[in-house]
Amino acid sequence: MDSWKNVAIVAILIAIIFMGTTGYLLANPVVKIEKEVVTKEIKWPWEGKVWIPIVNEYMSYDDLVEAIKAEAAKGPLKVADWTYWGLVDTYFIDSFKNYVKERYGVDVEIDFVGTQEAKGGFMYQLYSAYATGTPPPYDVLHLEVNFFWEAINKEIAEPFLPSPIVPNLMHLDSFFIKPYLPYGAQFQQHAFVAPVVNLEKAGWIDEWTDFADPRLKGKITLWSMTDNGFWAFLATIAISLGYDYKNETQMREAIKWVAENVHPNVYKYTSDEAEIIELSENNVTWINCYWCCSPEMEQAAGRKWLGPRLLKPFMPSLHGVAWIPKGVQHPILAQLYVDWLLSPDFQFPDINATGFAELDPVTAKQLWAGMTEGPMGPYYEQFIPDWWGGKEEYYKVFPRWDIVKPYLEIQLDWVYINEHAEDWISYYQELIS
Image (cartoon, rainbow, N blue to C red; front, top):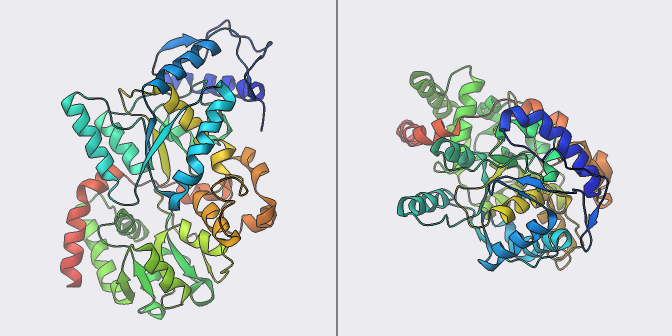
């Protein structure tokens, strides 16, 4: 792991670049990096005090330690998250606690509230708290990008980046940083709304409109219609056909095209992960739409006939963006959590660490592949594990940060989609009934 000193130098440079955008000062003018104060294990680069966002104070290292202790005394850091197949309990908790202990010498606790469904419930709970004047129930939201944009639209996200206590942000390619400053940090390279493809039977697909090919009759599963993956699919088809999904007339034409051309090829609409895996692995269906983690996990398990395809004209992505709601009780620990998300401990975890080591080797590799989503910049390449077979084999499954950019250039407007999805589903159901 790079020293805090090297990270600090990069942090200063990036902060200067974004200072006009964020309006934050990374450090006061007299900060020097000549003398290093040492914690138990990780070196601290600053002499003097640095500006800490959210709390809006200049703080020394000792000030930060005391502030972290005070926050820890209030109770555990609360994070709204996915379940990661149980890794939030078996790996995340200890990893984050060790991260804080190594850098600040403080023992902290963290609680994850994880779900794979109805994540909008987290937002309703936030709104309810604000309505009643009570503190937010979560300190960090570790969720899909659509919830980030909803928070921005509702003006409930706290600006905090760049921050001297989130130095790992500086390792990301700027492509993954710019859209979310100063309110959030992208922590997944991608989270494609994507199919598991039988590469032997349907590896020829190249575009989303290929789903209409008659060779695929009865060989496709699409997401449940209440799944935001299905909504993204409809918007993506509209763009593929040259339509504007924000134009009601054009969107109805796109939905009609899906109903007439893709629906006849659909075996089932399902977002049941276990069912999708069964259909894929038994070759009942050849294109099974879910999320990018599915083909990545199949590859990790050695089922090389099942894998991903990057489809034209772009890949809709609901990658994760971490953000901090206004008025949280653990503003400093929340920032440290975001930094941990961008660290090698989260981006490329040690498969021999607690949480993975107890599993059989195949399952451990599957969960590792499902948790990680490829590097967000060249810095992270050094952590690609040898057990995967090196970079060449790794990049057959996970795209390089530069290769993936064209597929992420088009970002869907999730505020708009959330507002219109119900109408889209209703019209689609009318057409296919």
